[in-house]
Image (cartoon, rainbow, N blue to C red; front, side, top):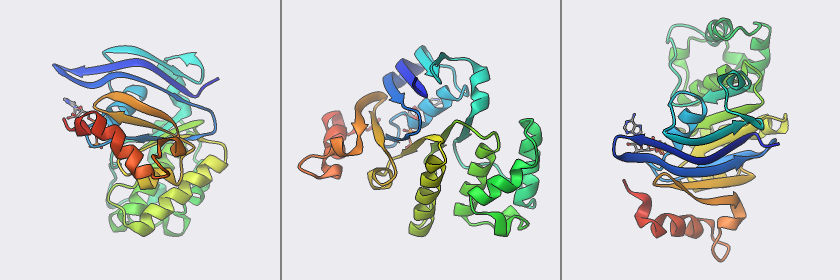
Length: 236
Ligand code: ATP
């Protein structure tokens, strides 16, 4: 059984092929890194998987089953900076989301502990750092106690400390048995947390496999850039 299986996925915006035949497989229990330069199609792919965008063609299977929106109840996601109400604290945010998703409020304490926001639970989020905001976004995603969690560039804009905290959080979630797909355009960030990676360039899957398999003469970055350069730098 696979957690996510994408085959021949296309998403066209007019003449522009944001996804141009994506194939990839996320296995249960792994941290899967979705890599690619700006504009490669990472966010579009995640939005299509989450039912936020309609694919032009292709197939998606979730948890081994043909795609069905009801399966999304088991998927948590953080795509783009979460919209937050500045004057509300973390607990109030989570209460609103718990109600929206029909989740028992008793999980709120659990998820605040998981993302390590318990100490600042009563601080208005307007006073949160960007790293704290991202973590609150992940707390919202965790409320449904997902089997699979999708994170779109959760280290965007973070300083090195925030990036390290995010890596630790991803590892903790994975250690607790959650399958994770995380995107980044930074190879270094992904290499340290992921079991396998998929490299998208200009809407196509150009590599899928273990992080080490990307390396050229032991150099991961050289391997990553070789893939990008082989398709004209992936600039679109
Ligand atoms: P980044 O790392 O910059 O976030 P990405 O890999 O997530 O990039 P996408 O945001 O998926 O890339 O975009 C893929 C391509 O599709 C880009 O060329 C983008 O301009 C285009 N695109 C995305 N959304 C739309 C839209 N709603 N309408 C038209 N074109 C779009």
